[in-house]
Amino acid sequence: MKKTFKFFSVFAFLIGIFLSSEIVLGQVLQEKNLDRPYEVRTTNFAGFPELLNIPTTQIHLFAFRAATGTWEAIPFQIDEMDGDVKPNYFVTHNGLIDGVDELSYLVKDAGDKVTLGNWIDDEESKTYFRYEIEIYDTTVANRGKVAWIYIYRSSTLKPNNFAPYMDYDATADFVKSLFYEVGFNSKGIMDYFSVTTQGGGTGVDILDRQKYYLEGIFPPNLEFTVTENKFITTRVMAVKGPVRVIRRSLNDLKIMYDQPPFKKDQPMTSKFYPNFLQYSSGGIEFIQNYGVGLIRQTWDLSENAIGMKFHNTNNREVPIDGVPDRAIQDTLEHNVLNWMMATGTQGTILAVNDVEFIGASQRLFYFDDATVQKDTTKFTGDMKSYGEMGIQITGYRIADTLTYKSNIFFLPGNQDASLGDKILNDFATPVTEALSKQNFLTNVKSKELNGRPKAFVLGQNFPNPFNPETVIDFQVPRAAFVKIRILNILGQNIRTLVSQNFEAGRYQFTWNGKNDFGQKVGSGIYFYLMESEDFRDLKKMILAD
Image (tube, rainbow, N blue to C red; front, side, top):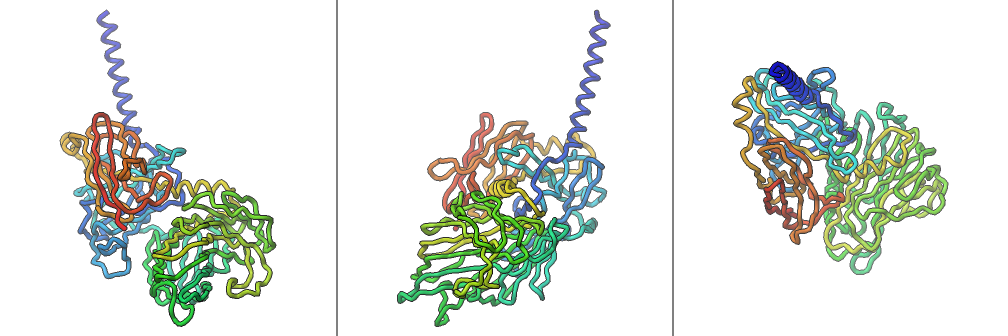
């Protein structure tokens, strides 16, 4: 009987060793399953206190590839800014990292998880902390999907031999990506874009031009109409890196008597990423007492777009051929976020529009008619329209500002309309990241245990007040389920930021000022509530104008 007991004890011990080694192996070979091929993650360095005030050249990003057991340097970009709430990328910087500087990288470049002792081959980096960025998909359909990126610090490491995704020609005002190309005319209006062969298109220019149209009244009851021909770009600035190009133009608008409806030097900012560009009005400031009855911003495709098809939430398989179509359903499913797409062998152009809800009516504008138009006060460019698509707002009286943001994705050709719903869903719920600091562990025994939190802790968000996003940190002393919710001043749930299991450690998540539906919330006082087991803590934060 004793021998039998001893046999089973040894057997159980061996099984325990096997299972333990499998757990460790699982940690080393835990592979990413995140499916965000077009998303770029941009975060402030406020969440990386050990990296502040060091040269930007000492920062390196790596992904671990479990299949080959190797580290891969991945493209990233550090954009220095000044300390204002509204970022300024175009001032002189000192080359040192501070809390408002931005780090950008592609989510698709993230890799697999490694154990603490697995390090890149660089001795200096082992004397500093490294950061593990755990990237989560929090959408209902993909909750639990995750990937990892590692930030190293070293002055001796020179791994940045990756090919850049982006380039910018300042002389021609022309942006090049591996997947698309965009150009501007002499007035600063976008009048060229194509999906490259590498991006899954044919490389032909399918844009006539980006168009604007306004009509309204200014004192004393004088009617005015404005097209993009009235815009005058006075200055263009740009910064470029391997991950994004940031282009900022200053614009005037002339109507009559040299008095425009909005103030001079209006900023228009475009951020170009490998698969998409983000165009923003930046908040157009209107002069008081100007009445605007109609505002339209569209993308008018060229004759090269013939054969493509138009899709949006309420319209499918609409041929783009310059021939007027059957009745188009112009209702927008979302007051703020909506999508529209043109797709064919030439490539796919998908616009996700993010427009504040203003006016009495906010509708889809779609126009496909190659007939020459005689009314040049409304029709511009080549005087023809092929699948012209955008947003039209009516019944709006200007009192303050108008903010308009459009994200144009350049994707492979012949896509199904379901892609629009997926990208809109991903756009409305961007990935979230959790941060942890790690040492190079030659002796796991003391260093790992000393760094473990001893209690649940909810930190104060930073920055506070904030705009447009803030970092919330918390600590977990043991494996536990954690929920963090954003509440308004009435105690109503605005956004579920965190709802998942965590191992013991310190984590940071970013809130971008949007609710669970991807809509921007107004400025004011908000609260964030952390709940886990018998722990509950509530803190206040302020979203600035």
